Length: 105
Figure 1 (cartoon, rainbow, N blue to C red):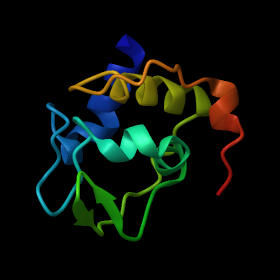
Figure 2: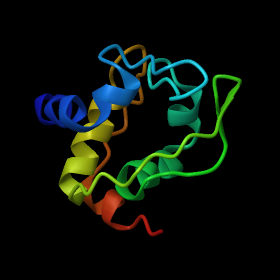
Figure 3: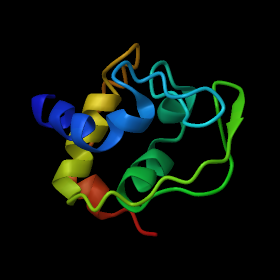
């Protein structure tokens, strides 16, 4: 969790904010996020490769681009584990480096 928090602070916080609530209508929330809970593979892929196109989070549509962060698979796993277990999210299933390595573009 500590490694994931450090990565979040460096790469994610400027858009998704310290509390994970994002910016309304611009950057989706990570806090209490139905998207993260229901779309695990897509969420990992977004952190690993970036994201463009419309997504719906907690009933709200977002269409902002997220650039690829250039993280190693271990860093992707660490930050995903942090996000999936913070701000009301409680996934309970650890994201592994092996799982991240199998995500393709």
